[in-house]
Image (cartoon, one colour):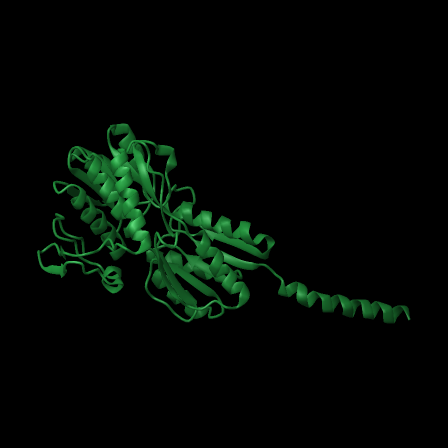
Length: 357
């Protein structure tokens, strides 16, 4: 009788073990191109990861690897994360696209989400934000506040995302101030404080009293603060430590709702491959506080532009617009289609210099 009870207890314990295993936490991984303390792009992605943890509690386990170079190192890092049992992996830089697609073929049961890319598969989605909407607002403020009429722009890599941002900022700068000029320095990095600081300093020496950036550190803010009388804008995160001046506003990337939604989809078994491109209206792009360093009328105009973009009443790429060579692009009232924007490889009319090849 005692043996029977022992066997029955063992069977019961074994039976209870099955649902317990089924309730193992969903493992969500993140591959970052920069350090989580960069104060910009990666910092905001990691805030999204932490939001996933807070939202789901012990139902999830998150893991991350920071400062992963784009290329072969990325493929190794993504592979290792999949081998360690990740159910869902977010790869958060444009240069991770090919490595993500390659690794996804080897792990068909793992779901992958690639930020800012365009290639998908049955188990690969893409997601990005319409950063150009925020850059239109920055361009308006920048051109309304410059005294030298020279705006400096620190660009990272010559990919459509960055070119779109330059064009959107320039279009709206020229609308606010027809005399404005853009000077662009290509840093060929997402995150390198020394290079970013050097680029900001060089632009200031060329007469720029406003600095825009598509790089991830706060080094340009520090360079502007040191120079004095130079305005900056937070990139990807608020960079609030530099407000109210030189940082007078910012573009903030809010990834948390998307990360929570897609994690829930994996938990529910409803995850499907998709392509998402959200903006101000959906809350993926936020405009940070416009400080009192900005004149009240300029602030009012900027917020009105934000509201028009959010409502869909206005598109930042609305004609008449020509390409840099003077050829017609958009007729009066015509708006750019997403396909053109996603593949943008040209400057609009008025911007000097060539896009590096």
